[in-house]
Image (cartoon, rainbow over all chains, first blue to last red; front, side, top):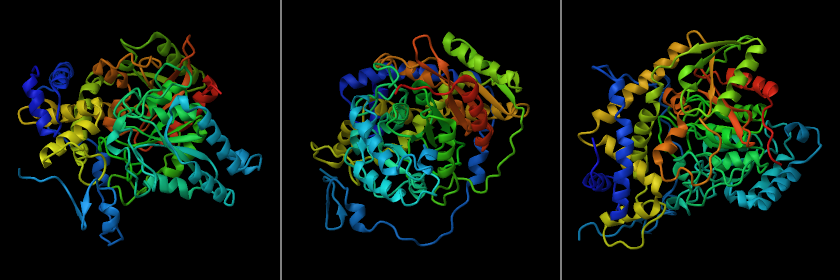
Length: 97
Length: 462
């Protein structure tokens, strides 16, 4: 399964990354090599084996905490590090051109 | 150090000042991204009044992907260069309550992605043992700070070896606790099913003291465990040597040092057993599929809206997202987001991600089987000693393969420790790794103490 520049460009779009032509070319080469290496996993798994929850540790630990209301960040704190905000809202560039 | 403080041989403020002076004099190591000198002085003055706390006055460094309230938490990224953490991580809260003095935030690979600490927006860290060589990653700043006496101990995070590998390269002790032993609240997420906060110290005892403070249940982390029973440690241990960890690609000097360590433990009365972990060859492939997949989802939150960097040159929302992320993230982070998105995308999911999860289950089962007849495993931490800065930057796969002995531990959720076990002919530190059953940190720490006594432990530059 080789990776084409089109694959990289499509994946970058899905991941909301804007790449230059040079980056696409570089990632195409690197990801091609890495995924080729990863393809060896198909030798490890033959036939259908169920994919069980991997870590029994995690399964046992899934205890939800009590649903108690506790103080959280106020609006001012939540907005304090936004690149742009106004009147208690996050502000972003226009969505529809 | 705690003993010197307790006996009054030194004071907390004097100790903190000495460390701040050392940090200032050794800026060229680039171990710290931000030094919190004023906060440290205040904490030291308070600690001087509360000497009975377990870490009263002990100066500790925090990896810059763990939050400290009111202090920037950059994660080694341009994306978060100016982000001030609004709360303390659970582990930081515990350290503060125990009287520890926080010296600052240490350099690391961007979002903890890397094995050499060269992926930091704030520049690489130098290995204090050998300038011009990498300290290992991703907790490279933490390991370098501890090795270079710029901190008594440090917190790091370990997703695939990021505490143990730099510990080995810098000649210090590095503990990666069991998944669930330590709260991840306030640790910036990279790969949530693998991430765990760890400890770096110059001795096993220092490492243990910090671990005992940070461990324990936290209601804010649903994967943290409560009521973990402490198992008694048998006097004579059966130590497994997994043959797959001593195969091709292992540097002969590292092999000699680790094998020598095994023989020293045998001479001390422990039993050595040859074991097999048959799915080991698939570890790196499974690990990088899973960690990149999780990273691609976790890092979707950096969108230039709520906090962090936003590109100035945008006209509409869509290009704002794309440009912000392209300008805010470095090459390795982009590479992993792309890889993660690719292995999760339609048409490739089964071949990569679903298969990797099955392999992960097999790798965990290999350990469970092995632990039926042995108490722990002894392996090299890394296949080589610290390599030169820049040496592997153009070959991501070669860099990934540095994690060949450490990632299986994260895939299986086990505890492991890297302990110094000698030096190469060039004087570079070598680390041995002890892997234990879930929640048997006490056992691996105890065996690491024996290695320290018998093989020499850490002897760092001063």
